[in-house]
Figure (tube, helix red, strand yellow):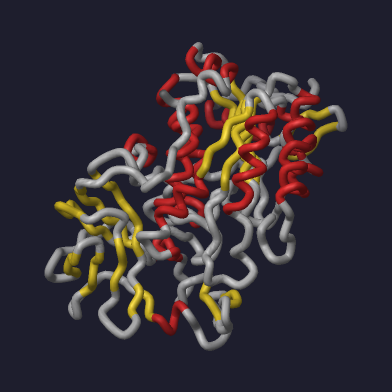
Length: 400
């Protein structure tokens, strides 16, 4: 039986009893070690409210921006937030759950790239005192560079995704400054691209930290608009674009750095005999509690590659340059951008390895928007919008 599910069917006098017998039988799994209870059936996640094609269309390429997230902060003046591009026409400004559409003039005004709230606004906002609290409250805080505190959760129990408004608008600008997105990896990842094109079975493993695990999109918190993790967006898009059969595992774990990734690579990744592994460490490596130097970081990522290839020599890899941490957060912001150097070296020194540079994309976005516009916790996790950018960068490698 070798670990496969064993289903026992017997004749029952009614259809109901047959179903009951089937359900009871499926609650047992026979393994080499004996019989054990099957894991509970997980509830299917709610369907995301965003269209998949819109979610993964590169935001730096088109002339229409869909559902860009902003968080309004009030200081001395009216609450305001900035967009990536100057809008020519705003199609919609929607509530965090996408159930209410706000009105220009009544709820907000537009001044170039800046949206500013009116006195009668219905749009949620955060005060400066809430963003930079004087003491630790129920929302959770971290230290702020230069002293004081920085909030990691919205007072009242709300998540950042439940305060971020979604803006759709037309604009005349393209690109992220000097950022160069990756190009289609037909020659860098030939086995992966061939398998996708020929609709062959493909096993993909995402392996990284909490960002790779989906924190903290609205889907992660199971609240509207239910944005999936960036790995899930990639999986769904590949399935739709190629019609390929994809076996997908996310073996990431929050709070971990590349040393843990190297130590656990065999049991969490290699044992799945993957065809493609997406490695996404770096945020935790740069934390002040770790401060992993480039040389060690490179050795750890190389160790993951080598370990997996002992199981499956032809496995290919995408190494992901992490988003940046909030520069105001004490201990979190460090050498995240510096890890692009060893990642590029790994690509040059290994066949079948490609780089997805999210770091530089995020760096440009931060020249035009506040960190909390694009963060799921205000410190080191992406918002729905930035999770989409992760997927968009990765898919440039995988979809022509």
